[in-house]
Image (cartoon, rainbow, N blue to C red):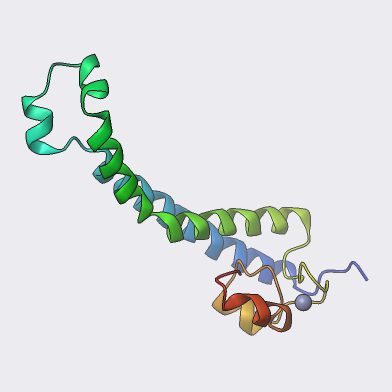
Length: 131
Ligand SMILES: [Zn+2]
């Protein structure tokens, strides 16, 4: 009963989709990070040079960064899930529910290629934001 229910061709398709998802998220995230970590105009210009800048306005900068990086949450979660799904493809467990071990339907995988659980098991947890 360890036989994969997805064909090699199907797995290849999902892997392709996951990899382009990862690539897009990676690009988007580094753009967001650059944006988030960019020095804040007035403060950066008026502050002391180089090394001491970091310590000098660490307080306000840290708060700004936290705020901006907070927005990355969902994308980072999806990126982690997509990477985990790629590992499952490598390991041969992709497409199987982590909870009950039954195959996840094609319809669900098409909508959510990084789904960890079948619709039946996910229904209870999805409302809380779990995949
Ligand atoms: Zn299940």
